[in-house]
Image (cartoon, rainbow, N blue to C red; front, side, top):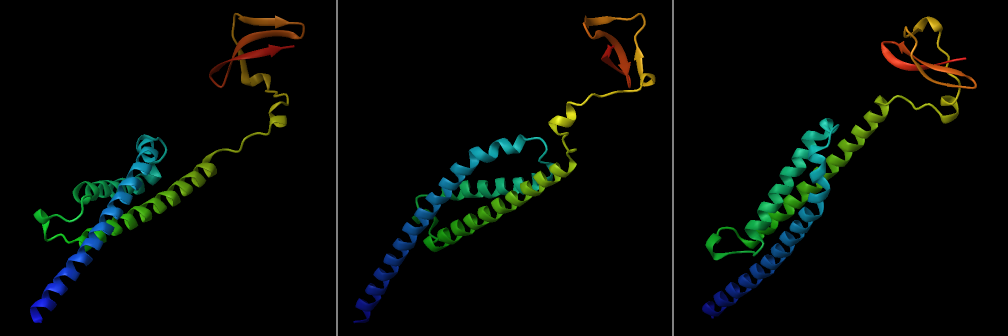
Length: 176
């Protein structure tokens, strides 16, 4: 009777391990899908300018995705007799932990990019409303140096346009 109990216990243990192994394989496949979805979106960010504030967070997410790819490559087939010390439960645990780390890193990146975007908005000078930009701009004649000899750039019924210098830059000046 003891031998029968031992055999039944062993069979039950193997059935549990098979269920865990199937669960681990499903989770590693989900992990692979997550990497495949996020990779194309994140790759352009690695070379994007202006993301210096989010660089470490982006690097962390990249490392998490690299770990996820490693886990999938190593364990997508589930438990193996060649690595009998790595049980299906350990594979499942490692996969779920990595998925959680990816989720946390993605949330951190979302926050970092939001902050970066907010700071850029703060640094950007306010734009001039269209109506304001259409008003006549007048500059004191003492600030403009008309080139000598005069270089006429154009003329019309309301005056001539000549080459001048304003704050060290060449500009066109309409003289009425």
